[in-house]
Image (cartoon, rainbow, N blue to C red; front, side, top):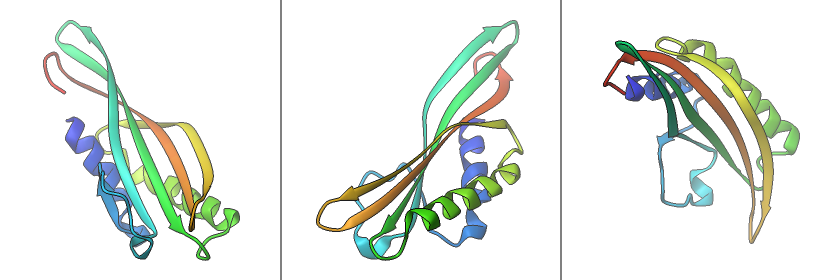
Length: 128
């Protein structure tokens, strides 16, 4: 179920027409931006009887290139991502935990936005 919950989030982002990666570890080239990375980093569980209640942390990272985005436009893209999330609630209830915006002032300015979701769902006792 965990994989399906993550795939539901990825599928819901398709209308944004921004490349979406699951757990991308290689750094992006500026020519690859904008891009979205989806990660499922931790799962708090509560075993009870024949079921397991899951509270899965899903991080959605948005990267944009210099000259392409202002902070206002970055906020707008994050808002569009949030607008897609009702479509992702096929197998879990999603709750927003945190939203961050940051700029990296290296050789090139890269904007980064993150949305941390909590996905709540139930499986049989020994399933993820």
